[in-house]
Amino acid sequence: MNAKEAVERLRGVPVSGVRQAGGSVFLVTLADHDVVIAKRGAGAGATAAEAAGLRWLGEHGDVPVPRVHTRDDEWLVLQYVPAGPSTRAAAEEFGRGLAALHRRGAPAFGCPPPGGPADAWMGLAPMRNEPCGDWAEFYAAHRIEPYVRMCADQGLFGTEEVAVFDELCARLPELAGPPEPPARLHGDAWSGNVHWAGDGRVWLIDPAAHGGHREGDLAMLQLFGTPHVARILGAYAEAAADAGTPLAAGWRDRTGLHQLFPILVHAAVFGGSYAGQALSAARGAL
Image 1 (tube, rainbow, N blue to C red):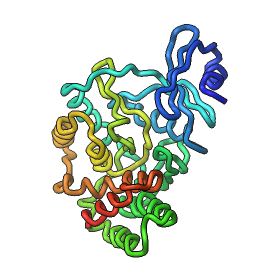
Image 2 (cartoon, rainbow, N blue to C red):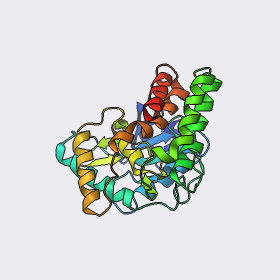
Image 3 (cartoon, rainbow, N blue to C red):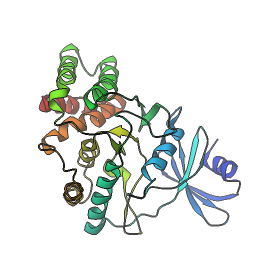
């Protein structure tokens, strides 16, 4: 089923135009001139996971997220949010909002959003959300080891390289910094999912939401060149401190540790230089 057929069936109205916006995402114009986004899920459970994540992240309005119009097992139909320029004011508002969103918390590290499946997706890679007792246990079991195995199976890592990741996982309790409560995490907050909108705000799109460590979202923001990232982080740190939940000492030094997960995902999906980058991040964290 293509995007036109999916939207007509799910929305029950004729479609007058479809334009590919990138990959599996389509800009769909309805006969009444309304515009929506139609997105094909990456695999089983993808649309359910994203819909649940958007509802969870948008529950209190801390950071705007697109409204979910409808979905089925293959397609997700979302609110269309026109793009706008990146501005310092929007960056600072976003930083404060993200700090508030993280403070909403989660029942456990690794928990899926309410109503969301345990088997979710991080872009094109499967991702398991499984509640764990602490962040180190969760990060090792569900964010490092599965993707190291995928890379090793593809011949990207040999025995010596795998041993580096094994050592990192064993030492995670001491490398993780002071204990933190689970945060309500977007989970894939790279620059492409930070949407500068025409309403002058930053919206978050395409989540891989779960209960996680707030430094994970902050590290993702720094991975692929988010505009005004210094202002975002500055506003975040100030808002967190004002709320009595300051970032723990050394959080900037742990950026590479938290970036390891998305880099490993890229290595598992795309190979190439990402495998070397992941190995460098692991050695740097050690």
